[in-house]
Image (cartoon, rainbow, N blue to C red):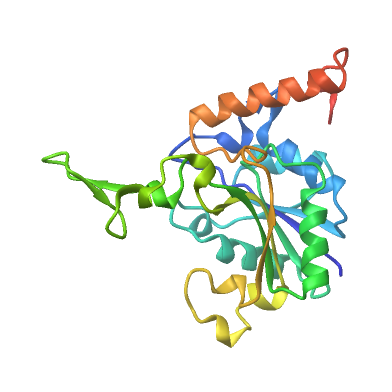
Length: 250
């Protein structure tokens, strides 16, 4: 394998404007993802962004920069379209698989990227994605609430909460946590006919998952997530070395 670490970092965001360069523990958010990529067994690291400040940060950290076109940096732009543009710009067909990393995920478990790569290689999968337990937001506890009457009915089935009222009795359920996504070059280029043409066709057919603990990944979508990530990063740095400032890591 010759894995490419591809960081996606567009400038805009409705939920948390400027989140990819927001300061977390005294460093721009994107720098934490660059650190994670550097620590993994990747052959090359590149970043696709329309943000000039992020471009400069990435270049100073020795990361290849791909200028993302405006049409691929909108709220409606698809991740796979941006990734395909990036690998075309790099023009290196030996890079495979593609490890997609989101710049708005400053916290991942140590070794997560390598775990995903190991499963990808050993399983022969088209893609590997990281998942976390849904916790108390379990699908069995999803309900419909009538906006006018307040009446509560099950989202599915005939019994509210499927008759389960203790979290410990819920069957395991997981949700993608944004920590890492590994896709084969063939899958990303939509060269697996059986995958169809839907928005997730670039995952291919043989899809695998690596599991993280609940809360082990912080995916920033709102201002509250920024506060949580900043507190966790400062706590992590203090535990590792109380005498070292987190801002010294470049």
